[in-house]
Length: 265
Image (cartoon, rainbow, N blue to C red):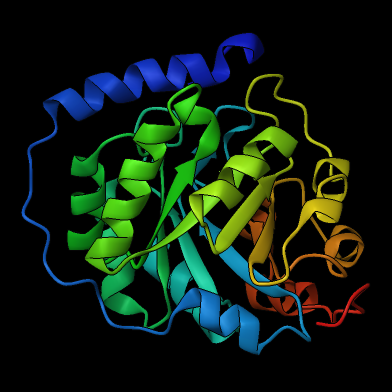
């Protein structure tokens, strides 16, 4: 489903509230065992790590790869050395499904991220039971509701999950730091204007904190973009480029560029 640019986040959140209202509550089981993403990124700071995404479609691009075998794609990511696999579970706008997360999490040993617009505890419990070890919380989804963001963040951590907190600007980055987030993403796509620019990531590096790890998300299609953010970011999240690649393993390997850090890695 394509959305008017000015209404992107607003439209998705309205749909998501309806979805959550109809979602049955689940009792969360134990989080699937794998390594901690934060620890992995800290231990491998000399190389840009890849969070590889399974994404069939998006509101901006429409259909990307509807015929993909999601488990084959995920296992290829793992074989090529991805640090984590991100799985889109939004059914309306990204043609995802919670079943995709479950299928992939059963087939791989590395961390899996539930990539969705999470606004309710029910989604977190569902993510755990589907095999996720990391969830996404987008600061922009909690405008003027820091308490709501903190409540979900705290709950997820208490359950044993890791949380990727996504930001888009300095104000949101400050909130992520205030939250105590250890894994912080900078999305190069502004969810309100829909524009994509790597400069969005680069503009925020001066405000990074040494104890955290940072992930640059969106707008990365090859080694040129990867090398541009590598000095400042521990990892990049790549979806469309890998979903459309003729040789997925080769492309992922090429993206794992050495980091020539501006500061000590």
